Image (cartoon, rainbow, N blue to C red):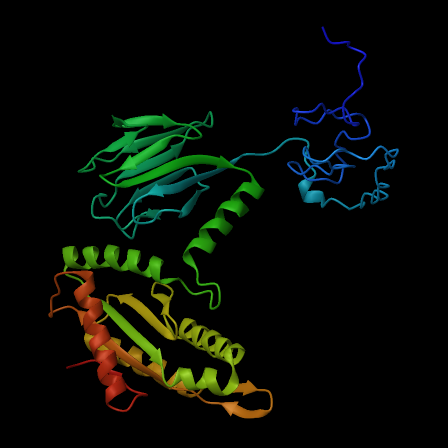
Length: 364
């Protein structure tokens, strides 16, 4: 039987044939407050194959803690100091369909929702009736929704209804694909929701609508125009020789050019028209209810307004630019899909480029 007091083994607490390290307080890992989780800094490291030194261990002390920074005292704006959040603003948020993300404020006693431009809330979706539903605030503050004899029906939380009291969080389906969420918001929630929606549909540089939004609106407007046999026009345009602007003056100046073009386009179009940055130096305008001749006149107004721009550039004479435009109107000339209408405008833009630029091509 072995004597338990036998110390005939290497120092450091490791017996021959035993490769495990018995850690004393001097060899136990020290986890500093400044050490990331998962990383241990050992005061002494030993190999299981080499006897540890018999010299006294060097005592290590944790690093001194850096003095804590003082808390910054700030003044909270008065409009954010509220004893009670006032969630008293009624909204309809589109959570599915062609207008996903759009938010409509309901601030009156009564409002109609439908496809007709005469409605208080207009949703141009073929599945939605001209006047689909009506909202009314009752004397006790409840909101009553009444279906106005719609073709494809109204559903609240998946259940078809002719009328219903709606409350915060209810989901309202109009027709086959458009779903709205009825919500009560306070001022901050309203601002956040609007900001999120704007970020999703706007181009960051020019603050025009982006291509995704344009494509969605084109599909909706095309279906509407086809159904009602009304005119729909697309003006697709491209800044001439834009690459040479970037190469000569640099991309920051190119960005200024695009911003100036965007502002000029916004100043020319009507409130109901849609202008978007289509990609790179390409822009597009979608306008309804004007004949081919009027669309061509609009194109010429745009071309001349861009030609008149004089953009200051540091160290250079003012920069002059031009633009080429392809214009097409769906009226007598019919198109099967939104894509074919857009392709026709692109073909005409190519003709304008090929024929010398700085011009409008409205016929082929």
